[in-house]
Structures are given as structure tokens and as C-alpha cells.
Length: 124
Image (cartoon, rainbow, N blue to C red):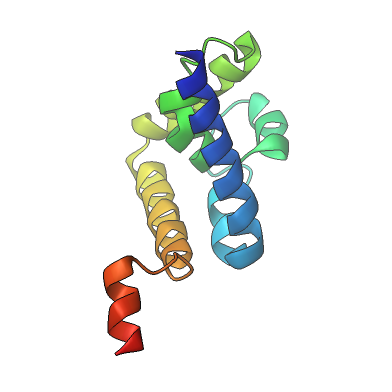
């Protein structure tokens, strides 16, 4: 429902904000990553507009939510769906996006709060 969508949206926004501060290199690779012009003609002129907002790795990874979110604009849903389709069609780009996603997750994990068990181990 609507409340579930808001929670997911907030979590994705928080992840983006926190990663921009704690993991700037990984943030850039994931949220702002763009292949050099001319490397792949499959991505049309829309690419420039999309990446000024969010890189296509982020669009691809977040498409599970934004491509179907009922309160997203039709343009946002289309942008996410197109990025997902384009990345899925190009194995080398999909690998690059997966690598960028894993690197960002690994970096953020370094800053995750300790669980209760881990806290007890550190205090002993």
C-alpha cells in the first residue's frame, strides 16, 4: 500500500544521502555512473537527461520500486523501466552496475551499527 511505498522511498533516499557522505567514490560509481559517449549507441539522447538526475545503475537497481510505484510520475516510471531494460540487454553494463552496487553495499556495511551480540563481544 501507500505506507509501504513511502517507507521504501525514504529508505532509498536515505541510502543515497548517507552514501554520498560516507562512500563518495562508490556513490559516484553507482548514482552518477555513465558510460563514455560513443561506447554504446543503444542508449539514446535521453541518457544525458537521465544521468543528470541519477545514473543508470541506480535507475536499474531501483526500478523494482520506482517503475511500479503508483505515486511516481509517468516520466519517472518510464525512465526507470527503460534503464532496467537497457542494462539487462547489455551484459557488460549489467556486470558494471552489479559491481558498483556490491562496492557501495560493502562500503556502507563498514558503517553499520553493531548488533547486540557484536557489542557484547567488543565490551568483553
